[in-house]
Length: 467
Image (tube, rainbow, N blue to C red; front, side):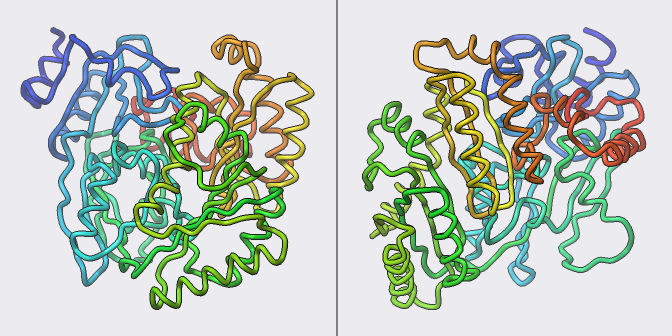
């Protein structure tokens, strides 16, 4: 054992350091695209232990890869294949430290699973609104490190908008205590925003203070069938005009994505018949259940009368509402079962979404006949998961090897022409690092590199990711 590993073991104990054996849970990403080999896995149980690990990494010049729930999709939280990178897992740091109901805030450690944070807030009669398909395994620290979005961004914003303060361990092993519950603090640079979305390249988030909200009195959920994406956008405008802030979710699923779901997960019932586009919309925070349901029915009735909706189904129970959401959230699982695919987590102005999809669907069909576009996402905030699968009979791995670069170029060129982003909520990681270098404004890239150099001069924090 090396002096570095000896020192780590002395500081963390047997439970805090894994060396050798089966480390595959830490070494491979969820998509199995970036398998690596770790020097070891450090599992600190406190902020002080995280700081000690980083001081040792600085002393011995060992690169460190921070890891939360390891549910990321861009290869940002697993080691490379050198065998020289230390994985720093925050999984043991999972306490909810405090809930301040009067301040409508909660402080939790970075290793807290998102669903547990939601449950802790609910136990206090409040709502923590960040919600995404991986909430049963992703962690708060990872959500903040990637500025996660999810299904309620339309109403509550991304993880960044939900965060009031952070506790961060710097590359030098110092602890920044920024766990403020304040909503106003105009005392200089907002250091919090440096670390949110930085993917562990500037410091290690160990805890966060997050905003809470009143629990909605009722949630109303519906599926609506639309003949075109333009109709779905028109429904969004109508819903915003009629429901205002009560509109908390507006998801869209293409016919191809629901057909894939029917093929791979046939046990999931789909209440509506086949339609070009199916919208999942949700309203909450109504004044009363009766008033809300009447307003919801009126909204969908107006949409049908106006021609932007062909058919609709309103959930009649919480169980049915959850089943509607389960359809939307199961599409990534269906894709995983079907094999590797080319994922695009893009954002566009809502006004540009329809033209983008029309252009790209036609361009990809001409480029490779039989190609399958699985398109779904958060239309309410302009975020599409525009994913591309191999034609029938073509091996997914061969498809990626032969066509990923060309397809990415087509998609990202079209996104860039419309003022969009190549990463809406998944981050950059390793998957999009080269694309970021080509497409990000050069001045912005220069500023990012200067910040990285200032905060991590040895370049040991998540090297090779993002920049």
